[in-house]
Amino acid sequence: MSPFTLDLDACRARQRRLLEWMQETQLDLIVVTQKENIQWLSGQWFNWYFQPTVALRADGHFILVAPSQPPVVAAADEVLHYEAQWHSTLRNDQRAASAATLWSHLEGTPTAHRIGVEFSTFGPHLATQTDAELIDIEPQLYSLRRRKDTDELEMIRQAIAGTQAMYERAREIIEPGISELEVFNQLQAAAVDRFGEMLTGTGNDYQCRSPGGAPRAGQRAADGDLYILDLGPAFRGYFADNCRTIAVSKPTEEQLLAWNHVTAVFEHVEQSVKPGKNARELFDEAQAMLDAAPLGTFNHHLGHGFGLFPHEAPHLNPHWDDVFECGDTFTVEPGLYAPELQAGMRLEQNYVVLNDGVELLTTFPLEL
Picture 1 (cartoon, one colour):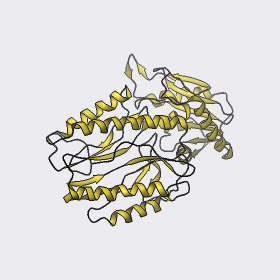
Picture 2 (cartoon, rainbow, N blue to C red; picture 1 turned 45 degrees about the vertical axis):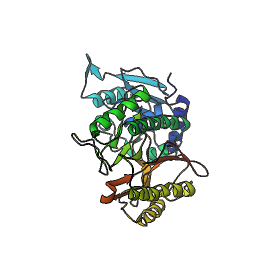
Picture 3 (tube, rainbow, N blue to C red; picture 1 turned 90 degrees about the vertical axis):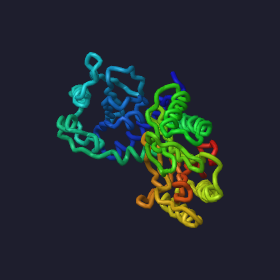
Picture 4 (cartoon, helix red, strand yellow; picture 1 turned 135 degrees about the vertical axis):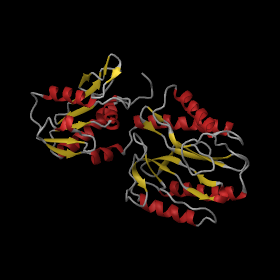
């Protein structure tokens, strides 16, 4: 077995945490359909085009309904199968098939009067088969997922290693005249080589002289430009998300001045964040620091949690009022933007919250 897989014992522990809440809430059954939550509970990663389902009974019995291919290694008491493909063709009615398999299997078990479901994805194929009261469990699942276990951190570290390989390659190839598409292609190849398999995510920003965006055909780097690369290769469902800005040639004095103000934010984060620190207050503190810079503006979020989804809690953002918790993995991405900076720069570090502070997960260079 690959060392980079979720630990089945840890998955069982996550099931028990959910079961404790389930019993406190007096739910008879939980049905989960979102693939991120299924992976978190079962340990099995499914590609986006499959429609698996899991069910957790009040007695702790865990059922996975999986496509008949690929093989499944999961923390489950029972693994049921539905036909996701007919003669190698993917079915478009997989949700109906997996739902039918689950409900058929549950016939004869005690009647469920209160069922916990994810309201955003619990569709009619499942809902029309029960008269039970439906309770939205998405907020609780997101809350439980914030605390990253050791096996999850190993997956995240592997994803971050992919970005490190991408940035190492970027510093080798970025020079005047290189095209954005060439940079994109070479960085994707670097991550694939590092993982030894296809990516399950790529990241957002591959544009030069721009705050961000997808690579553009015909666009080439020029002397004096800053190249913002905001990368997030996902490894078997777990995301990284960190940004570096690379000077196409020697950085200017203005660019170096802006860099000093941006990197000062990381020092503040590493000195101030611990469990109980308010994330919105941290945003306000960073905003004040960057507003004091002699050039450029900072006009976006400071960061966010990440894991099985690119943006999770805690939100370092004035529109939320989150508090840091032990086990949070989060990004910090200060930036300054101005025409004299050739669009601007953004730098991003990844951290995990410990009992008494934070651990830096992205230890590769920040230099322009």
